Length: 527
Image (cartoon, rainbow, N blue to C red; front, side):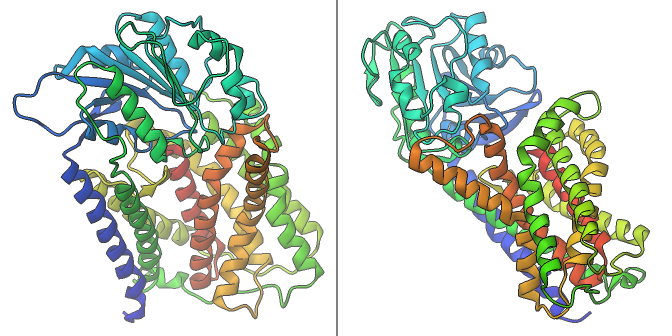
């Protein structure tokens, strides 16, 4: 085997070792233990000899605001942090834990998880001591100066959901909201950072407005400090903590390095696979259709870049309407993303066919391509499972890949054909029609990655530029889709690189399409 074929593979393992080693060392050094519990997980503080019962915090996250650093940092500072599984009653589970003081339980609702936390408090008003709602609205619950007990709101000053959650144009207007005035028992504008009322009688109120957006609230030092500090202030038995003492950035950095290493191992492994008996039939030079960038080429490239973006909101809406969560396709957001990709790919293909540009013969050996993709993805999953066994996930800021649980495997199998079809069509356009014969490697990578992601990057830049300039996004009626796009953009960039690597070594659309379909399915189902 030529030595150069091992370089990427070995470099990937080096990144995995560095990233996983960093994440594991910090997590092990912190003493925090993470355990599965009834479909959820519990973060346990470092063991202390003859320790009294500990304060506990039930955390209900949502899909748009990842849990982030909160569970880990709460445990590191002496709290038992429980994330209940689907349908689980986190408050009852927390009260039943032997190491938890039932008189010192807090509730933390993140984003849409705030509704579940408020329902818990209404159903068992004497079972918790304090509450924190992060980047959330208050809904229609009957709230006032006495209920919920000891409530803090952390609402990002750059929050995208201000109109959706509070009915205001800008997040800063929440300080003057009548509901907040009733809740805080005040007549004037709320002063962020000021504690109103008394912790002792359960009427304490506080609003914090750190400079953070919805999607990254769980990864803000100010949010983590405010959350840990609030529960340290309001829960009996909580020890004095330095909420500014945070280590979560290091496991995140380690997870990011491990993710980059995992992708390198997948690509290096594929390159090695092409040298093995049978699979060497897949290896071959790319067959480029375009001799240069003429008007037809640029028209096709612009369509590839902008059809998915211009149809983004509409196609997500069609997915929500015609493909709701059900027995087969159980994840509403994944349904919308799959529908968006398939519709965009079909429309794009029809439009580019109408341009009558040249087309290369970029298909072959579908069975062997599928087998190669299965080997690559299976090997990658083995790496992720091995990392999970030591408590490390190849991801950062909520973006990445993790081991699937039992129920998620069935969902992945249901979604795999749709995502794979989308990438067969997308990559047909990129490789069979838009690849330029004279391009060097760097130009081919940049061209293909930009075709998949440049439109999305521009739209996000416009939306968030408008947010930071005016206080609200350009499309305030679609905040969920905008936040979702933040997570889709890095996925599209990564998949553009993966697909181009495989096409350059095979001249075949199918291996990259099968691998990208599998990775996209894995990312969406696990996320």
